[in-house]
Length: 119
Image (cartoon, rainbow, N blue to C red; front, side, top):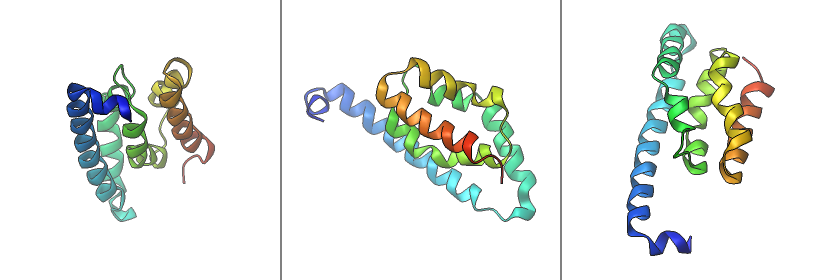
């Protein structure tokens, strides 16, 4: 947007967030394509993501809709591993308390996580 072009600090931060998100998403996609026989690995990964507070970090004070959009494979992994309501709580809170663009993307992720249920 035009505002990004006028703020070099914001531009640098946004580029850094995008690079970080791209790297995390590519790793998540690679792990999400592991054959079902290695499901324990995916369950361990999903548990580690939750323990490490990754969702809270993605949905924290610096949440950005593009980062959430790119993190969709991570949320899909959690859905596949039967994420609990407590693990999805940051999504609920984001829908209610974040700026409109972030809340909208959080709502999409929440709909996908709750609506389709585990496979």
